[in-house]
Amino acid sequence: MANKVKYGLSNAYYAVLNEEQGTFGAPVALPGAVNLSLDQDGETNKFRADNIDFYTSISNNGYSGDLELALIPDSFLKDVMGEVVDEGSGLQYELSDAKPKPFALLFQFEGDVNAVRHVLYNCKATRPQLASQTTEETITPVTETINITAVAFSTTIGGETKQIVKAKCAPTDSAYATFFTAVQLPAP
Image 1: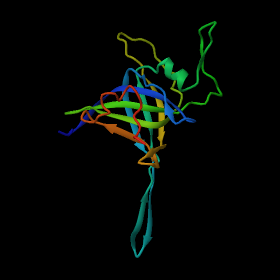
Image 2 (image 1 turned 90 degrees about the horizontal axis):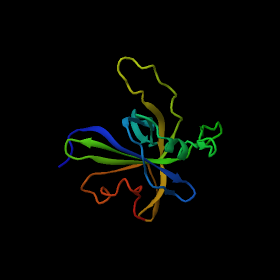
Image 3 (image 1 turned 90 degrees about the vertical axis):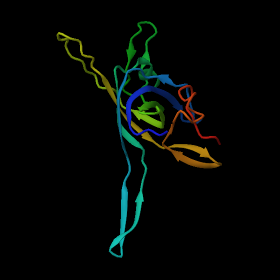
Image 4 (image 1 turned 60 degrees about the vertical axis):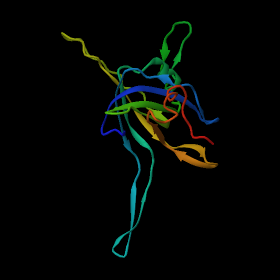
């Protein structure tokens, strides 16, 4: 039975991409997923002839948008954003010349019937904002947001090199049970 609606965001993970080898590290949890909002990137180009849209091309340039978490984990800031920890003092430093590493973003959307699991293969993130506020009579958590851009990832499908952006699976798919233990790639 297929979903009629989707709602909820859970099970967010990141897995660092080794660009030279085209492999991913083990997924690491991003607890406290609040909101994921990614818009498609691409253009529609129309060629006019004979007084009509004679030819139309549509490009898929991936997605861009925001991932909001209760708190960005220090592991993400080190693994992806390039922050370093001083062994002597324990201070974690943000470096001005750090180059963010690409990563896969894995997550799950709930549905009225099935939870569907997704992976965006080749993501980059911006530094999170730095903000908080004073405490009033009640404590209201201040979330953190990173801007994410997801672009194509080169892999082999059926003996051909293809550019994939994302994948998804439902509980009936064989990849579902192990989806968050390793980044799922097409069989060569």
